[in-house]
Image 1 (spheres, rainbow, N blue to C red):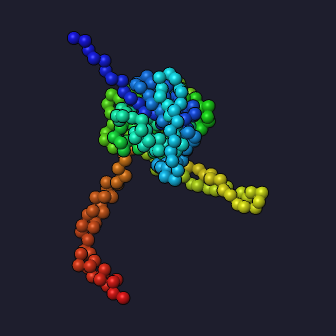
Image 2 (cartoon, rainbow, N blue to C red):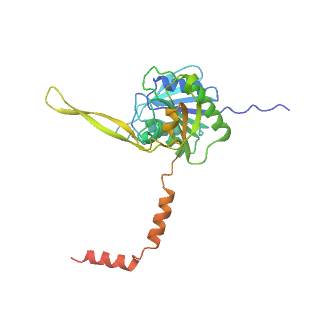
Image 3 (cartoon, rainbow, N blue to C red):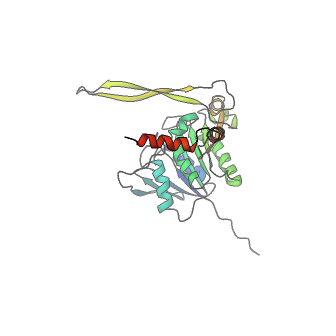
Length: 279
């Protein structure tokens, strides 16, 4: 009896740096080794867009000829627009995996809240698809993605074989060091830190003020050794499992007990409402 060939996985690749970024081409070529690749990405850079969606103008889908068995499209919208439109218009069935990146620049720590790369990853997770966001700590357009590809393959293979827990996606960051200097992979927690925004105020030739966003990242726990920031600073690829449920479980339990045990009765609440209604 002849064995039926196993269906190749369908892998959806997107990003926030745009369809022409070097990082997404490296990611698509890497993903091609694991299955059929479909790329849907913004037509231009959309860094820092977080989970924004487009509602003020229509979206347009343009097909690109990438060859090499990769189906590619661009969208005049955000990374999340790309994911939503792809699921609605391109995929007849859910893909087996979503990969976002490889981003030019870090998305570690609280950058996950601003990142278009991770917003696309989280959107895939909301659709119930194993999703991974990849970022390289190098902002240069011509960055070297050799290390990202080497360790990215290991991570993709692991997730394809073992899956991810429901409602969880991965935030992967790769240090900007030569491939042979990377020490390996560490699963970490998200570092606690904040971006300290500053604005460079300037004046245009007509006398009107304008501002450029600048600033710096402040690590609020520099001594911690189990965070993504520490792993990256010591030459490791960091993996942070990200949950789409933002509920803080300990605080949920504390507040539930606090309000359930409150002496503030329903009758008192009704009395206050009645009092407020008196002119």
